[in-house]
Amino acid sequence: MPEPQEIIEKALQEGRTTLSEYESKLILSHYHIPVTREKLCTDMEDLRKAAMDFGYPLVLKGNSPEITHKTEKDLIRLDIRNEQEAETAFQEIMDHMNDKTGTVLVQEMLKGKRELLAGLTRDPQFGPCVLFGLGGIFTEILEDVSFRIAPLDRKQALEMMQETKAWKMLDAIRGMAAVDKDLLADILIRIGQIGLEIEAIKEIDINPLIVSGNRPIAVDALIVLAP
Image (cartoon, rainbow, N blue to C red; front, side, top):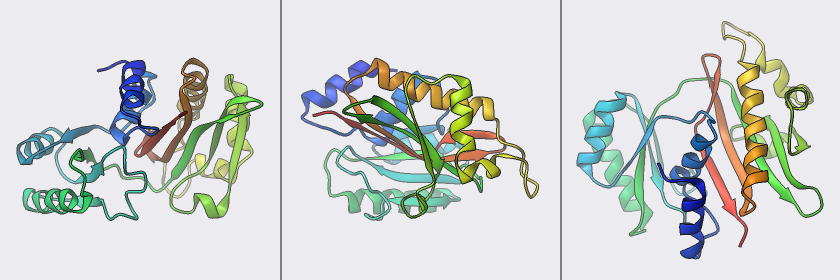
């Protein structure tokens, strides 16, 4: 697995200010932030191997640093249940991308009703700031987000959770297990660590951070670089 600095230097040399979802998750994984099991596929043979490794159902997404809003561009296929559906979805996404460098990211499909948001923004005055809140498609409407200046300790990470409406979702409710808050705190602490250690990173957006069982796992991620 390439080091974060290698990924970033390559992107900057190519004149890019965003990393692909795959590249972004490689950096998160380096810092031990849980992400979905996934494989970058360029052809049908890659797709079949990924399906054998992960099993069905699968998620297929267009993957390119030029694409930051996959849903709006119709580049996501969910709940793929067999080889025929997978091959059809793969071809549709490649046709839609209209990008010669584009590939398809094949992921395990995680099931979870609770969607959270975690990330980082670099403030000109305060430096890297970690954010946490409700995730999913209503994030911008609900604006249920708390902020802390990095670095964070565990107490501050827990306080961030408590300041949001998402806090009540973290307990055991309606047959769902309580969220592993220690793991969630670790994720917020590590995001702050990334911001302190890699100045070239301007923003991190992990949305959604889906709670699968009791574990929050990054399902989608975007890292923006300082130009």
